[in-house]
Image 1 (cartoon, rainbow, N blue to C red):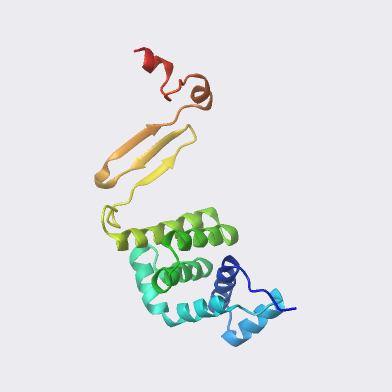
Image 2 (image 1 turned 90 degrees about the vertical axis):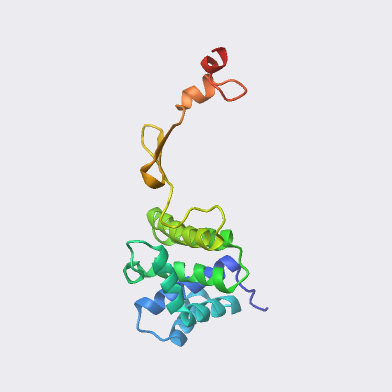
Length: 192
């Protein structure tokens, strides 16, 4: 019976693991591929091989672009796993027909699964900045970032460019259910 090729998600995961292992071990790519086959029970598929080769071939240009969008974090300082994920996602954005949202979502998913939620936000921010910067148009320039944080008391604070601060208050859970009418306005606002 023929071995079925892994899904694209699995192929990305395999590519990330090979890229990561290439950074943190002295093994050659051939040794890593043999290890992958032994560990996973199947050899890397064509997409995985193409992606790994593409990232290796374009590492210098990928790192230059990542460095330009990861403010305060030189690429060499980014953890090897996150660096491998960022390189793969950026390679997909620049050298394949993968839609930007898919490349970013997959990169964030892999990061959150194998690293931390904070690392997932970092990867999302870097790749989102790259896509927003490349898209031009109405996107904010890369040094003007809107950051929204939720405090424990339910207040959302958005720090906007030029030191503007926007504060949005979310209704308390019981107010949202009991005090709102059909239009979503509190009863007091409708009566006024």
